[in-house]
Image (cartoon, rainbow, N blue to C red):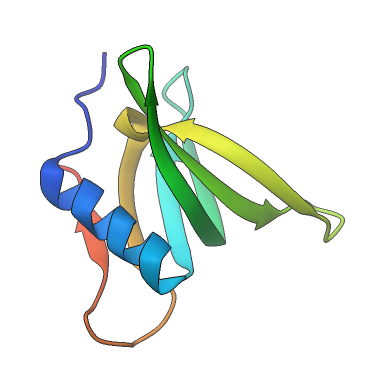
Length: 93
């Protein structure tokens, strides 16, 4: 089982949501395969059943917009897709 996202990671996600910053998100799927989501728009972080979920918008292969949710314990890294201050960048230990 993966460790929950650290408090500093949660704070950075919340900052990205409030500032409407696009992120490049790196995570694992349930089988441990690495998945990269470029230029996502994080919408909300919620807790349900003891698991924290990140809800975000991204595009599918056809260019359509889709809304996804992801267990934050599966997040390995993310960084803002811009160079604004404060810099938003996280990598799990």
